[in-house]
Image (cartoon, rainbow, N blue to C red):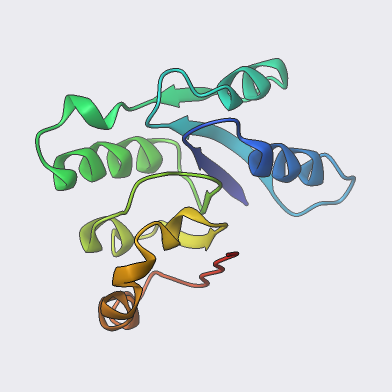
Length: 138
């Protein structure tokens, strides 16, 4: 299983995922680490572990959907099976979550960035067929 890990900063959760994938017989590989922040320290860890990295800076896009489309295009080109949001500090559009074969699997914490609005997010989330699991650690 090809996994993409999306980060915005240090990538401490990404590091745990990378280390887990090094375990013999582990059924997944970290295929790439992607960040919306060109200065994310976690990119250095990924590079040091010979994992391809990509920066798609959200500030270069006027609309959230344009940024999400760029993410989707890159992930599709890498034939990603599973996306792990590991400190990724962006809310994703419904179009991204529902984008074809890419399966959004786990959000470690940033999914709860706007906790005050979390109850209003339940309905759109229930309509997202590609959203497999959501884990919010508060």
